[in-house]
Amino acid sequence: MREFEYVQATDVSQAVAAVTGDPATSYLAGGTTQIDLMKDGVLGPDRLIDITRLPLRGITRSDGAIRIGALTTMEELAADLTIMERLPVVREALLLGASTQLRNMATIGGNLLQRTRCRYFRDITCACNKREPGSGCSALEGFHRMHAILGTSEHCIATHGSDLAVALVALDAIVHVRGLNGERAIPLTEFYVVPGDTPQVENVLAHGELITAVEVLLLPEDARSGYLKVRDRVSYEFALVSAAVALVMEDGVIREGRIGLGGVATLPWRAYRAEEVLRGRPAQTDTFQAAAEAALEGATPHRDNAFKVELAKRTVVRALSTTAGEDS
Ligand code: FAD
Ligand code: SF4
Image (cartoon, rainbow, N blue to C red):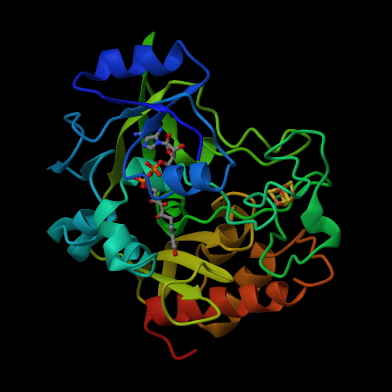
């Protein structure tokens, strides 16, 4: 690992100024992504600004919403009473991610900004447009069983690894950020960008903008929600496919449905078309199957990951059936 300077920030404005003013300076939160990538030589900042002492940790509930400080850990959020009672999809997504040790270190802001697990991105001997723009994409002709089938481009097919973001994107969460010119609020559905011909650009943040909090509106009291994650082994593994769903039903008819997909797309994917299919229809298997078909419309699988299309449809059906209380 290259030598770097370590600075502990005590003030939000100073931290933002320090990172914004220098492209070779980065934030350090729990370090579970950042330090890994530095050890692998993928990232090589000259200076790290440790933000973990900033007053951005904790969860507050106001009327109808919950505000999560960016430095709250994954484990703290999963243990929050409001999350347990009103947003089980968030708790399940958190607890099905990483390991207890990691979740005790990893922060919510860092989770949203974690980098892809594409093995070629993490191996600096391989061509990778995301790491080194214009160098090529080793995954296209390489081993791409874990890669994306939605939102891809000819330049990158890497998936986004966050489970939490899949749940939050389905819930229309808002990301609050602080930059040199003040604060702004960004809907999570507009936060990430597909790779296109610039896979190195993953979100709309400018260098130095600091995530300060994430805000989520609570679902109606009678809503149901859940997260289903399908993976190669039962714990400590990223998703092959995952689905975050929320349903508001009345007399067996779906008033509102939300669906987020993970493991299949280049960003935490919101399945809007599938949600339209659900609206006003009975909560039963044929409705869920029609929604699953709509969710995977336009999928572009490659040689090794074609199985994900059918797996994703079945995951959506199972997640909706379980959440609705139907047999799948
Ligand atoms: P850091 O590593 O400190 O930072 C990550 C990035 O975000 C850095 O670029 C940093 O500069 C930037 N950053 C951090 N905080 C802020 C902020 N507030 N504002 C602006 N920039 C910021 N995740 C899952 O969702 N599901 C899994 O199954 C899963 N499994 C994992 C298994 C392993 C073995 C490992 C190592 C990780 C796994 N993860 C998984 C990823 C893990 O959740 C993330 O590494 C973690 O959430 C990142 O948070 P952090 O606080 O450690 O971020
Ligand atoms: Fe790099 Fe994306 Fe190709 Fe992976 S899929 S090698 S991250 S360009």
